[in-house]
Length: 255
Image 1 (tube, rainbow, N blue to C red):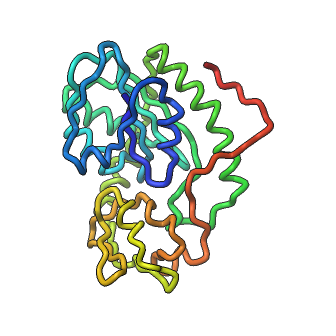
Image 2: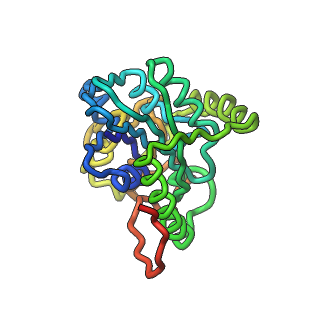
């Protein structure tokens, strides 16, 4: 079974690429429905796939792990992290939370994908995005093979990575104001942004989306819409959503 959380499609793509016969489960939907108990087939692998936020694990994923109940026997738990710069010590954070629940994490993998955090930095280059998506495919293929073989793969989390995660993550987690979110005159009041939000941060009032204070987890799911702005930071910036990139190149996906 594969559990995933995805704001703009990177982690969903990885989860679907790793899927063989087992089901995949949206962590946000499981939490929303308060159904976090799952029956695992004997010998089945359990995968967790999610993005890296501020060198750590998204709050929603931590919440899911804290409610997770695996029934029957599983043979292997692995974590796949998607990121735009580096995984930091997010794997160590997940390991700690799983250990509290009595679960042993057997492997941690990571896949570099285009960053979706358009609030920070320059406008993203489409060619660079496409290159990262193409380059990720053989990496995903190697992870698929490693999972089949039940490899133990736990990277060393150095002191710098741990310091970045344990210092930057709490700071960014505390400072997540929503007052800068607004919609411009292109908003048609369709409510899609509210329905997409995995933590129900957005409500519709008088036909317009309103962001609840200090509830946003910065998944960028609502930012797919060009009518949504964040102060002056993202005006005229291209919005990111995972897209399949066709290529004539032959990638060494080792199945």
